[in-house]
Length: 343
Length: 135
Image (cartoon, rainbow over all chains, first blue to last red; front, side, top):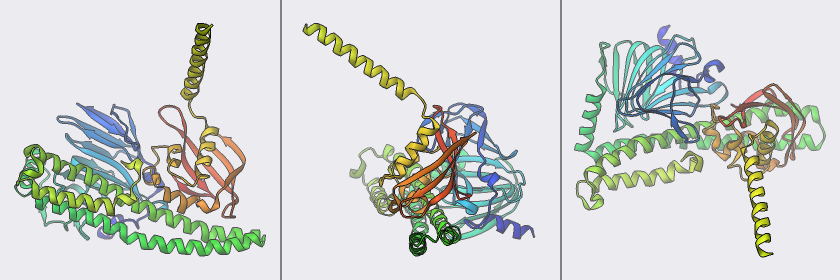
């Protein structure tokens, strides 16, 4: 029964989430050090206690800074650790709407009260998970690798087209573009993010080309997810065009009652279905943008500062070649679904 | 004479400048917001539609895409769109929506309004024929 409930909570894009949760926003209840908020229009300002955060907003903590958010839908809370970019997002529309709490880089601890079907999705730029009455710790390294560690409750995590169920005291590491790694026991002690992240940085510096290629796989996954929806959108558009042509005939014939029935039964639902697909396509595009901006961009900066000669440096050139290829792929595959206001 | 003319010109320029600044400082009213929104959906360039929306809306980021408005709510083939029987009650504006091609024909539309940090009226939710289509 429990397993079935978890699965139901985690069926991505198909699960119905109550309106009450979907409209939830968060409030900053604690800040320490330099903490910024970035709104959906890209405007940056200092996060202050009592500030209400909306969908599309990010919290950015600096070194030795942290923040705590309380979700306005209940007593659920999110602790955002230093050097973290945390975003409150959403995907889907209508009954498919789901809140996505994304730790893009850094570390966050989340505690969700058991809210029936109201739990959100949580994730990083490389994985996404459905939660149920969960206390979960999420770590996202500079190379896009994530760790999802469950303190209590249950999580179903999905990445690289595969999923894994995690129970209390279990954790899993996920590399960008890859299926979840093997589960490992986590006895509930504090995870040492700085040591782990340092290890990931060292691993990245040892083989930056391989790390960038993994991010490339994750970007390719987002692109494939988007591309899979585009034919469906074309199909819905054709169905709408057909329904509208029939509506137009009824309107021209002044058969108002029949026209109204057709609007309600077919035309409006088809328009809404198109809207859902477009918003989902946009979700993948915006998540890919975060990955490109915060993870791939971070990789470039880390390596460039160590090799200021750039392309002339043989230790930098191979990475630059992969990086440039990924940017070119991003330009052709993702950017068409972005708009100027996103950037 | 030239000096007097220059002074008059400068004073006039200052007056225009101040009146413009004052106008810009006024927050956008609910009526202006709805009017701006209708102007934007009646343009084939939908790139500014999102500027009338509440940036705290769940779908704000996604709805920056012009294709969303064209496919899901206001196809450009239906321009012009018009509102009739517009009335304001509390935080909502109700009206009947009509489009050129008959997609909408006196269809009920309700705008739920909010305010941004500069006290400008913004659209938080759009409900058409009883179904929430943007929020």
